[in-house]
Length: 360
Image (cartoon, rainbow, N blue to C red; front, side, top):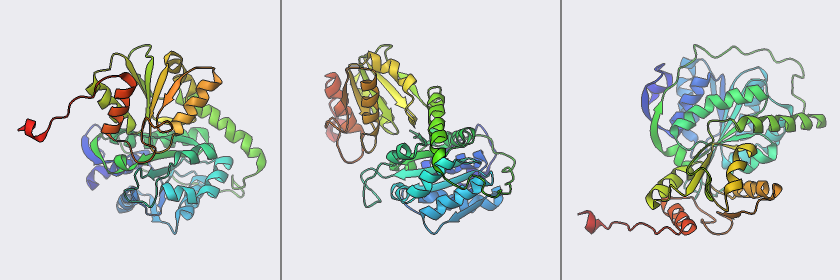
């Protein structure tokens, strides 16, 4: 697939792995700098970027560790470069000091962190949810559902980072990193914009008074996310039963709703911008709902945020998901456990599964 990374063929459709889609998105965004420490499921991203760095006139490195990778990207950002840092869930934890300080002093050129989580720990020693780090640091969090969104969200994240002067985290999961899907290519820039000389003490010092401006940026992001096309709704106009999904949960939810035949009475609210929560976009759907099922990987991150939002506005809603056992508390979602949860929620009978004998 290397030719798709450097071919300026907008409108062409290519079959891409999720990691490949991230690379294509980075090239379309015109990055100047990329750094990573290897960790599955996203190791391939920097490997592919390194192969085309000379051709596309950007710098790519395997760093000593994740802290060095992020700090190098911060340096490139201060020179007004677009910088991409790639880590997995454990690596993002290692960067906590650099991440939280940079979130307060801000960035100049766009700085996007791609973090990959591994639900069910297919190639990891543990399960961990990176979304808590975005909440803790007070930075934007995006999560694609499929390969097209994975590609498109990278330029969007860089634009968002530069408009707000803030880091943006793009969270992937294993099924997106290693899955495949059709991707429509966008145009490539002629060349990355040139770097600037970093002035003495140019945004390099993190002091207490910067915390206030960082929180103001978060509220501006919340307003922007309420208008984002990566958040959308399908279903009845005033659904009393609502499914809220992030990441691959949206695809499982769509499939289950269709198989169970409950499209006329269940609403599906899909969120691609997860933090800060786009409250004004979500509230109209919550106000109509009596019961809400949340589909997400790994922890009840959205579930807790939505419960807090409902409580703030005095809404009496029953929330279902990872916390109450409607979905498994550990391990990744799959079409079967999502379909079962929606079946219980709606009292719709599960469709009979065909045996191999019936298929003959």
